[in-house]
Length: 215
Image (cartoon, rainbow, N blue to C red; front, top):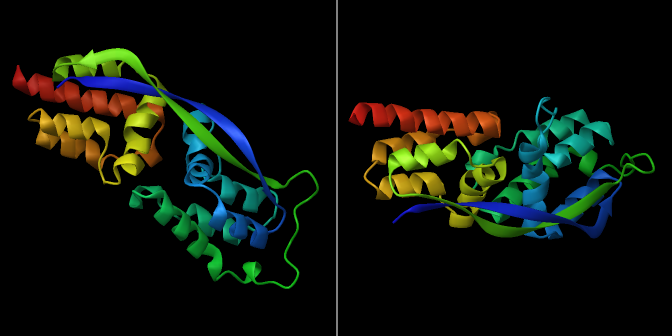
């Protein structure tokens, strides 16, 4: 079976929920949809280009910048997204990371300045075929050079949460096409520590090395 590259278009919507204090942030976080959790933990991986943000996690960024709660921000940022294949479990880990923080139980929690409230957003994704199909490893490596960052995000980041497995669409296809070692090499990559461009180039490089071995 050929590998079909998909991309996604995202429509971001306000949920109407907003937080001015840490207790409000955690209370809303317990109740919002999975798409909201995904948006606020993943959207910066797609939007950043030349400068790495201090925090990729929107919750951590808001706690550091608007609440001036650096200790809480570090706790939220320390949640390793690679450990999770379920948005439900990711949400629980984010909440648990600050449940014991004294700032959460303060009788007078710190309030953000007016206009700096945390606005919870959710995202609606529309999955679109790119028209690129690969029937073998050489075609797969060739198409990787041209697929968009949105496509990389869909097949690598979203796939783990969609499949609820510690793998991705690329590795599944490679494994099914007799490349278990290459699939494992792709699985071992940590997509959260490199840019999407670097991630694409790294996977393409692995494929090219495998093709060179076969020639």
